[in-house]
Length: 229
Ligand code: DC
Image (cartoon, rainbow, N blue to C red):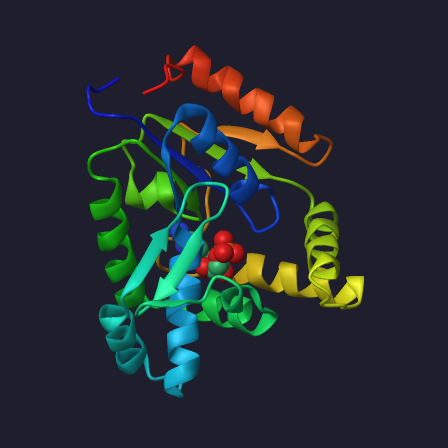
């Protein structure tokens, strides 16, 4: 392992538990948590607000380059701001989720986000959660996880999260949307979701959050990544 502080990546489809487990891992190992999906969501919201046509790739790319996106707060309370405004709640809507999956396929948008993510993690001491963090953003990461679960289980988790936020939708709609997003995220030409060769794959379908977390910690410990910094 290199001498800089560690870089841990967590990739996988939506609803696999990446953000919950990423935050838990960051807290336990005293690392900074970087939610890369939130960055694509922030760009999607900026595009929505600017009212530009999402087929106008140049205009969307320009918005991505101009957007001032900040991820602040500790792992227990991550805040996302766009040009200084707190958009943490707004970027979780179904509309933004849908749009983020579309604009994240644009190579110029990806190039800009990847450049920023590398800058944020350059000195190490980070846990990144996304779709390409171990394959593209930090191929030399110290530890890579790929989290997955069956589509039905992932849809069930989303469904429960949305109900908790009083956004009541039929389960079948949630499942359909998850499948659509997975398909789009996995089949795009630029940086599709895929498992890095050296990733530790964990299927969380039958695991509780605590069980999944313990497995990740065991792997981290085995790689010497436990000392509090
Ligand atoms: O993880 P999430 O659901 O917040 O991500 C939102 C969208 O952004 C998702 O459709 C995939 C895309 N994304 C990506 O293309 N690359 C990443 N590193 C993270 C997210």
